[in-house]
Length: 501
Image (cartoon, rainbow, N blue to C red):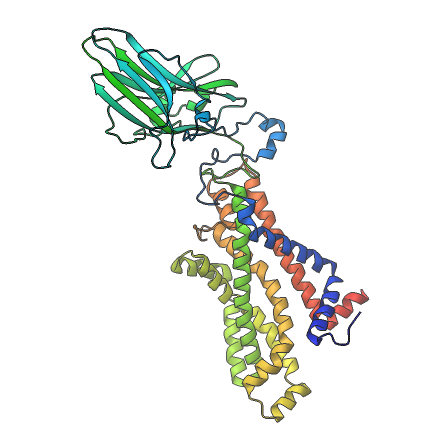
């Protein structure tokens, strides 16, 4: 129901919406566009992982978690982080570790005097030894054991990180050892050093304890190309991570005290399945890249299309209204650019200017205005002979006023339709350049995902290719549907012909 006092602009917008929603494909396109816009806006809420910086979230080329519903992936390894509180922030976290029985010579305890100063934690794990002289006790061993279950195949990788601090008084021969114990009680030493006083400083292992390191591979498999992961995690079952300090009391003349603190201890296995879309070659989340890719694709598509439509509209209006020599010069320039091969020209310019996302936007926009200029010029040619234009000229209106005051409102609807129709081409151009390796490497786009999949020779990981390809197709279809619907709404001839059919 229309109200008598309703503003004319509001009534006009309502009438346009009623005409638009009669176009079913236009409504579908609008829904798809809204979906991708929501996806782009809520990207930080939908995923906590940075699409580029959050690497090593799982093994490289990990499969999506939903593939575990199918038999080939049911036993695929998952990520395991068995240490619930790596920084020992409470005494309860110490209870996760099973320690050896305390004796008069050594003990393992929870210490609140020293924590990791980098994280401001109040506690740590401490090994304490008192070695008297004149007595020989042999080997004194204290250890802390953390057990966990690995119910799947061997992981793609495992790492151990921690900080330690040692205070030694007197002459004590001690070693710090970390090893993994499998269900068959076989021990695999993954790190071992002689203990010296650290001078009150917290230190990390000189070389990271990583199953991908050549030293650890050789130590466990006697082969630099061997699989340390399959050697240790050879069967499902209960495994144990053991931190051990061993004191060799073989000389009765040597004695003293030794305290060893451990903090920020984190053990992790990297699985072969992860998240909704798995990981890329660097262990980064592909789902995060897909979600954030919607932002960049919409940004490139809309801005580049807006730039090309703005330039094309201005050029078409000036050429169409002024006519004569100016029209001839502008249109010949337009024709000269329109016959140039677009993609090779983009490749050459990007190679010179550099693969920046803003360079892509500007170049795609500058090289896409020519068809718009042709369409707008033809519309202006049909409008400039109408009565209201003649009246404006007779009233003394300048060409500037006629173009922007009288012609602009008559071509703006057509320009909006061209804007929607040009977005898919801009998105496809960015994806093509990124797929060829000339996209911005510092931003996540769907084209970049396809490029990395091609670069690393992805064959089995079909989800790495299919989903960004589907997104590019859907968002292009969305803008095409919207553009055609807008063209039909703003063009009465098309609207009437569609009703007749």
